Image (cartoon, rainbow over the protein chains, first blue to last red):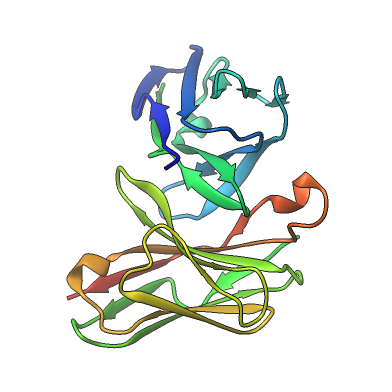
Length: 110
Length: 117
């Protein structure tokens, strides 16, 4: 059974600081997704990572995938309040079935 | 843009009632999914469908059934609602499994918050 572990589960950080969210998974996969969810809203796709070594960047967020280590990271650079949300990683197993991590609640304090 | 819509944003039902949650996508996607979201557990897959009238169980199918009579519509049915089915339900769709890897990306609807009392 595939397990996806995110850490930390809760992250409170000051504006302007950098931090990394980690996503570890327990079985082979070369497709991993990062989603953002604002309170009361649905999931918004952030990044699609499709191969080992893939790196994607959008604004202050950068995601990477190491399939050999079964690890993805979401790096936040110079955080701003607008980045406050819950972030999920999801690993795509056979048949397009996604297994999600528990989510990381990010709060950026000014 | 892909649009996935769900019939209700909020729903309150009584224990034992039969509950229908409807999901519609407008991009001719082949695949559709139902998840439930609970705090600290992330999203868990209930059922999914690769084609009209096709369905497969996900990780937590007990107490649920689904129906897909038309390509654009995927319904989740709670045959006899129970309080432990109080949750946020999210529908998603993806284009196909036979194309590029990017076609696997799932797009989510706004969610239905169901409360069973």
